Length: 175
Image (cartoon, rainbow, N blue to C red):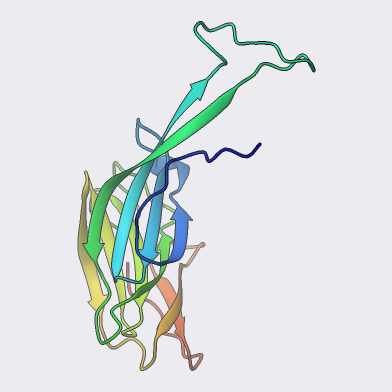
């Protein structure tokens, strides 16, 4: 039988989820970024717990000889920032800097950096410092239409590109 790995989370419609680079994992677990229809960038830590079939570490053997092990996860909100602007106000896409670490690097003056774009056509470079998100660079007029894609340059990691409904490239936000 299928059992959910985590309890349901009440959130706005999600446009994109993106796992952080492994260097950004916290002691509690990996980090997940969410771009949503409410215009927010939300970061979660994913805390997992394994249950090895009862009291004690031995676990229970099943008929096939495999230990009865299951795990559960809890999403804990780590940080949230309203990034979407304009009429619709949606944050449509998110990407992590491939050079990101929580302790520094990735262009964020001591923290991980992300890029987000929105239905307002804007793109933003966001820094994660401790458990706080901060806008580093904001270009509200990067696109005339809704921006639906943003990605860091994998070879450099110090800039990002974005595209919108008419296919124009918003290029290089310097994030």
